[in-house]
Length: 308
Image (cartoon, rainbow, N blue to C red):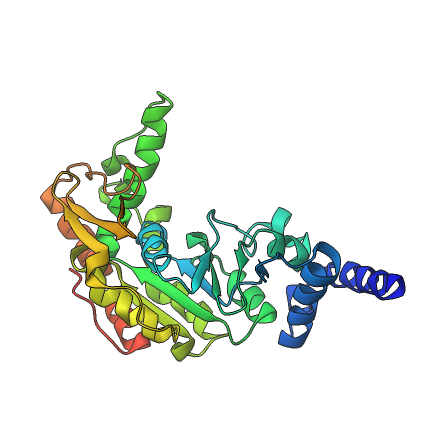
């Protein structure tokens, strides 16, 4: 037994050495499963109820300010889903990625063998290096992408950063100062680039077929969450466990909250903040700017969305 444990330790130590080239890292499914089994079973032991940490079978890859937290909270209503609480930033932050899959595994929640482990990091969608790294870990992984009207997403992006500065009592420029430069729309504004969905989607489709990616309509999720979450259940091949009774409209907050086993909970107060007022002419320029990129995205994914 001691010999077996020593061998397991040595093998896991080897697996955790991640090469500098992402494509060369140990990414085969059998190797990943072996690593998870050895690390949890042989070294740390399985919990009395049979639960253990597993690498995610599903990742919510984005988009920032698209509704990823709401999607994760709603998906967590399902008894067969175990969700990582925090954004892990494994594939996009070098200080995390360099620590290898062993570190990534350690960030996952305990889950039963029948449960699906899910993590969400919205920055994955817009990071050019992430698709290849995710594919190297698991080419069969199922990806969730939640998107909103690109113009609205830009305003939400700005609003989040604005409130962060306000909380720290730091000044922050108006949104017009970011959106306009020399009388024209500032196309170098990062928030605008994050909303060019077709650019980022092409990076993912270079490594994953379209049927591995389920796109959640973030605007519909806000207005009518139950039908959207039903589609997610089907995509993930989960039994239909989430019901319409799990959602109720909170008139005070102005959006849907969740009801789980008699317990009501709403998203954090930082969600659903009012956007700053934007000059209608500037807003019209924003809508016009995204018109062609939106068409390219619709053609790429084979469906349309009710965006400006």
